[in-house]
Length: 571
Picture (cartoon, rainbow, N blue to C red):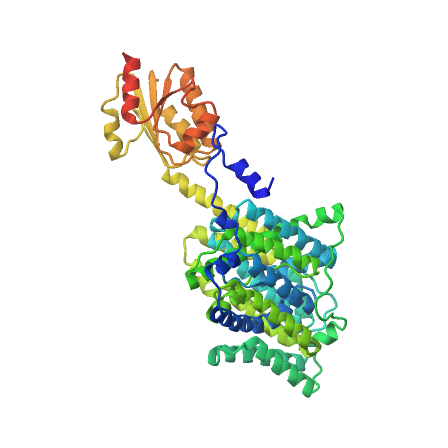
């Protein structure tokens, strides 16, 4: 049985086990197939080729720089951009997504390599790819909308600070006795080594950073990163500057694509890297879907989130087979693709092929690139990731949003990325539930309160009958309100009408509260009439044996029917 068919059968049944209508299968179809069915001609190919070449020129220095920042050699970043970039466009759910290594992975990759070696990273990447494939077929693509913006902004800003921090050494040419992965310890080491700054390295780094800023301001159409790489490499070689280069740090860097092979596997190793695999999968999914949302806003198209996760998963599995890095959708490169005229997945495919051509032709030239120039590029990348304007705007939000933002940011920088995300999402969820509970009301009862529209609900009540109405979702955050309402009743009535017309959702805790409400009422001789339950609450109550056929309660489709039922019982 296919995985998606199994999941459909598992999740698409009603309370009686009857199958519900099947889902639309187009959400698990690669966008490339849809584009080809629409018709693909030479003008579209020409536009995609121009966009693909433009993005490849931008991606070439970025892939190398991000690999170095992650603790790997530059060729690993290029392999990732080629292999994963090709498959993300080939199998993904977006027309214009560009995939490859990104800044979001730098911290995670660096820590995994430090703790488990590069082979541990490759295994974690493979496992993350499999997790993403399962997530796509399980249709988790819509989950992105449940990650609060303060959390996303907080951890991306935290990653930006960490990336910039890791490049201080190469930018200044510092000589360090030890290089800690901890943020505070790293800065202590930098200050201790301040006397080892190399003027030539600092000059190259500062010049590269200044040139990037100037090109962005006065010549934004030029590929600033590639221009900086070429100029600094030529200057360093021509002037014989005593600066560290890619060739001097990575003398054994391989050229071209390696032969694919399955990474070494053991259960002990897999267990050790499993948390990292889930972190990689989470980050890949979040950033890819965020990039798709941005691209949809720029193009007017609509991506397929579940197929995008499947494409991302296959791409990460393939990247691992080629000993590459984790990959995901790159927001900046995707935006460059759109601005350059790319409108189909062929632009992303051609971008990967152009990168392969660059690697095959100019691999030897990469050895001359100064490490300080790559550090300058990463400073610019970090600034773009920080989303400084959005960060400042969120600081003007209510105290709850500010707290989530700042806590996520600080934990990401000072503790760990996964801790920052986990705590941020938890706090944001608790704040949301607290606010939701304030919007839910249980009204009625002799000593209770009634809103103006409920004031007349007691006028037609037969003798010995009370009525309560629940407004809003009855979930664990407000389940206790229902029992408190029962306690407000002075003399226990013969019957209580519990109005559920305004309850759109009932969770397990809410169902337990209803069960307890019925039990406590029954203990004092009071019969409960459940009135106007919607489909989801009614289905869950039926599973809890409080359905329409239950002997514990009476059911009424609306309030008028409940009054009639109560009056008949009173007679």
